[in-house]
Length: 394
Image (cartoon, rainbow, N blue to C red):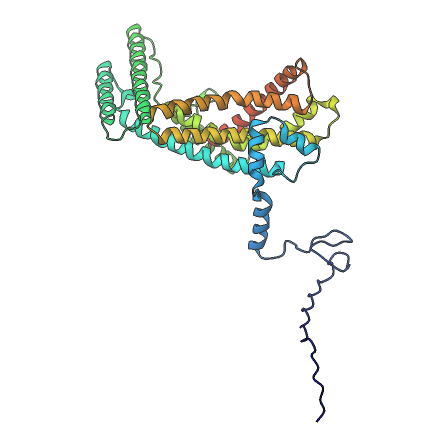
């Protein structure tokens, strides 16, 4: 039987054909990628599982990969560099302005809240140790007795094993505070005694409830409430409820001013976030003759506020380190670092403005002063609004 042996290569299996994409739902053109080449509509829409949508949002906002390290150092140490690089087209190597701004805003808010919570907890502890009814003492003898109890309690706290240097400093501050409370109470008791001796009405006790006058009469939610004629009943009821909360919070703030300061600092990042686009409008007005687009000023505002948030983040980290260490040398170093951050902040913003807008040494300080004063006015209104809202919260 004649048969020829033939050596033929084995057949290679064909690659599976790619599944064709459905046509564009908007214009009907054939799709060859995630975007339609004809109308630009993306293949992905919002009508899909929520987890996929949130994943895309998180990736858009927090996709800061290794570029964050190439952005943070020049952002903090080289005023105006990132802005100039963005303007001339070198964008890929750095985090985009909004992502950098948003990322530092979120991180600084978390760090500041954490630092303030620790400081508030420590202050509450010291206040509970040192508070011995000094502010409500009826006589000077009671003041002296309650003061001695407070000082003894604070002195006992010093003997706790493992007391750090920062805790010792807080105890020193608490001693100063309770002595001031005692002096204020003695002064008021003396004024009261003198007024009674003259037959006059004694001055109001500064530690009694805060009274609000409405039309010359003390406000009361039931007997003399706030009643705005053009508001419906439920709105007036809500207004009186908010007024009561504000009164209680003001009374608390008067007794504990540090808590009020902490609440103002806690809303500072959110206030800066809201004021950022307004700051860009301010730059547009001041540098009107530079003929720059609003979006250019917005990039300057984003980088400026990103730097401010980075500075706030550093201050919060320094505060946390101060609370965690008991080493005197390290505390001194951290104190110097804290001062350096505060000093560098206005210097940086001035140098950034001068470099980006190409101003001379004569004109730059003038415009910097105008911008700084105007921005502090805006910031003051923003913080005042946040403070008023905070007073009405529980």
